[in-house]
Every structure is written in C-alpha cells, then in structure tokens.
Length: 456
Image (cartoon, rainbow, N blue to C red; front, side):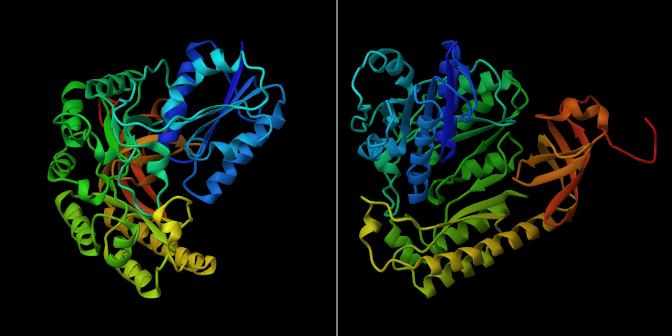
C-alpha cells in the first residue's frame, strides 16, 4: 500500500480542499501518514497571501524532498498558481498543480507524472476560468476535527488593492445547492453537529447561479437536511449581510450567532485606497444593528495595520472605531506587499517597526474586548459543541456565538460528550478563560445538572 502525506498552509478553504484530496487518495487505496514520516508521495497545499506564507510553502517542499529523496513531491494551491516558476527551481519537485486543477492531482500522478523521465517538474497551471462549477464531495468517514467544513464557493473578483487572491483563485464559482445539501446530510449522518460553510468569498455564493444567494441556500439546507446540527458561516463582507441572514440567526433556526466581518481599516480614506466597498460609518452602523437585532451575537473582525500611506490619524481612526464597537475578537495582521497587486506600487510604505507597534496595541485591545464580551454573557445558557478534553474531568467547547468555554463533567460522561452539542451556563471568567456549568446535552433524555453535594 502506497503512503501519502499532506501539509496544508493558509486558509480554511485550503484545509477543506486537502481533506477532499485525502478522501480521493483513501478511496484509491493509499495510506495516510504524518508529513514527518517517510512516504511515497508528499503533497503541499501552498499559500501566497503573505511573504511569510511563500517562505513556509517553499520550506515544506524542500523538507519533503529531503525526507525521502525517492518520493514524489507535489506542490498545489495559491503559490503554485501565481508563481509556478519560483517553485520549479526547488530540487526534487515532480508536479506543480494550479488552483483549479487540484481535484485532478491523483489522476495526474498516476498518469502523466508516473510515466515521465524528465527531471524538471510537470507544471499544470492553466489560466483561471469562470463558469467551472465546484465538484461535489463524497465523505466516507469522520476525520479528526469536531467540526466539519463544506466549501460552497471559490474565487473572488473584488480585487482589493492589497490582495493576491483573485490572481490565485480566479472568478467566483459556486457549488450547486443540491450538492451542498447532499454533502451536509452526509456529514450530519457521520455524526457531525456543527458544519461551517466556507469559501474564498462566501458572501458571493450564487452570483453565478440563477436566482440563488447565501440566504436562499441556508433556507434550503434547513428545510432539507435532517438531524441534530447547526451551521456556522465563515467570513462575510459587510455589504453582503442582509436582513434575512439576521432573521435566521435571531429566530432560533440552526444558524450560529457569529458573524466574522472583515474591517481592514477604520479610516474611510484607507478603505477607499484598499478598494473596499464601504466606509467607516457603514461598518459602525452594521455592527451596532447586528448586536441589537440578534441577542447575544458575536462579531469578530479582520484588521490590517501598515497599509501603504496609513498615517497616524488613519490608525487612530481604526483604534477609536474598534474601541467603540461591541466586537468579541480581532484578527490583527500586518500588511504584506504582494507583487502584482495595486497596493504594491503605492507609497509611502509603512515601516516594520510602526506595523509592529500598531499590531501590538490592537492585539491588546482584542484581549480587552474578549473579556468584556464574556462578562456581558455571564449567566447565559449557551449551546456548546464539545471539542476536546483539557483535564481529568474538564472539557473545552465552542458556543454558537463563538465563545470558548471550559466546564467540568462526571467521569462517566467523558466518552459520550466529545463532539456533542450540550447546554452550558456561563458562570465566570478566570484568567481570560470562560468557565461554565454543564446543564444538558442533545444526547441526554433528561436535563443533567451536576451537583457535587449529592451522590448519583
């Protein structure tokens, strides 16, 4: 039996695509092994969103070639698409596959690559095209994660001035609604209770299909897919959040009360330079509306520091906006110059020292925001997906509104709880960790309340 090892860099979509590749290789009889083990085949799913991700992608390919010089080494993903020539110079690389050809890797390996005698890698990175629908996926078994991910969309044509993704992924493409529903049902039948709908630009779902959008897809899934599950949405652009989405989140449907909404900057001037489609005031009103419309909703955000031309006042606008907004958490990252993007030619570039200072201050603010949100939620009963054991009788889980909670459980329930949806009352915050009390779970007939003063 041939052994195959995978390594994935970058976003959730890349991770989902790697899981889909694993399914194909398992069904063809390959054995999955850890990337640090000896294998017959190594596949690295690369990322190119920053200079750092480029460097890490190259390093993993070199590591694979050193691990087993006789193995076949494959590069795929975004860096492979935008700069195949850079990767082709790495010794020991056999195959470079672009973003829209990932699903054909197995066939390429067993066909063209296995019969080649040339020392240079085979490069299969044709120009990206529109109109190519996403293929359905068949899942044969559960994987290690407690949550499952379904890729419903790929590509983007927004062309934010700092972003390489449209060049790496091509135009937006959607998975057919019936295929999404079938995948979701498979995952629920396999025992998953939370499924994350993800994409490169998730809010564009359906723009290449007749009369479909994300809200209509959710209505279809809730009507058709049976079982005990909830759906979480990945990142949504501010202009793509509509009243129907908020109605579903507020109305006790199966939609998690969590909205990840990229801000990038709190300066309207910088937002225009970024080619974003909203301004500071729009974002502020949107977040306030969400938390008023959906009780207990959590909003998280991406924030970039150091965009070319970002002056002190622009950064202070960002800081002030975030101080005023009721967000749960921030993903703070420093601008990275990407060749081929409009921002790469913009001046002046912000110094690394200034980027570091601004980033550190926002990360500190994010910690304060998280503590504030937890304190506001004290006493609330939250639906929690149990994700891992963290002590002899303690678990960690994720609430529908994106709080990580720790709670205790009787030892006899340890094997039963992992991966289940349970109800937890949020009781306290200790060292920035939310702690709660187990109430009951979806798998229990009667509500369970642990009382240490009583036996049984």
